[in-house]
Each structure stands twice: as structure tokens, then as C-alpha cells.
Image 1 (cartoon, helix red, strand yellow):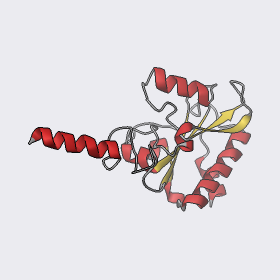
Image 2 (cartoon, one colour):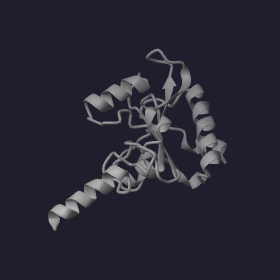
Image 3 (tube, helix red, strand yellow):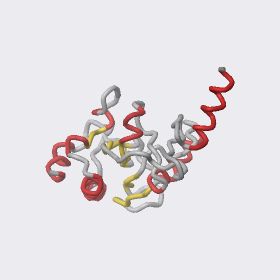
Length: 179
């Protein structure tokens, strides 16, 4: 009986009817996100420099994340060959895969992860980063009908123990422009 159940389980996994681990998929949509987005979760890289490619390498090599870059979008600060305020679109967004940006898997499955390059425990985001973030978040809120109360910092996600996106991240200012 156990062998039969194991075979049925693997057939259902292969067909996309059961979702396991990193392979969120719906039938006929290899690794497509099965439900609509409900949250936007904002992060900082906690590094002075970086870009999506650097983070992707780190997430693959050090954190052993099969899908690489944990975020859906990265907003650059003018370092690592990218323009200040440049929005980079990650493969997780292009393929509509769940994120890897929170310990709470529910938020990875239902939350769009946006990471700004910088350590906002030390400095605030650049003006260009800030306005790119405002534009990006407003656009996503509109397209996916995400309410303002569902725009959260990583540290504001239930169960997370972090100050991300940093003590100097301008939350009040961001909320003012998102209203």
C-alpha cells in the first residue's frame, strides 16, 4: 500500500497537481505561480554595492537556491555597473515563480519581493531608488489589486526577526506617496 501511495504522489507531483518545495506549478504551466499576488515585501541588500547578477550568484552558490535570485525585482544604487534607480527584473518574476526572500514560505508564495541595493541601517536609499520604488510598488498595487496595508518591509512580516529594510528606510515617506 505504501508503495502505491508513493507512486501516486510522484505522478501527481510530476503533473503539477501537488506542489512541493521549489516546484510551485499548476498543470500545463511549468513552474508558474498558481495564485494571484497578495503582498509586496521590501528588502535591502545590507551591502553598499551590488546588482541582480551579483545577488543571483550569491543565492545560487552560497545559499544553494536552485532558482537563484531570491527577489522578483532589484532596485540599484548606481554601483556594480548599474544606474542609480535602475530596476532589474529577476527570473522569478519573468517566470512567475514564488520568491525566496522570506523565512515565512507563505510570504514567498504570495509576496512580490523587491530588494533595494544598500545598507539602510547606515544610510537611506538614494532619491532615484526611492522614486523607482514608489513607481514600481504603485504599478504592482494597481495591476494586482494589492492594498496599501499589504505593502510590508521584510521585518514587518509575521514571524520574521530582522530590521530589514533597515532603520533608515523612509517608511512614512513611502506610505505618503503610495496613498
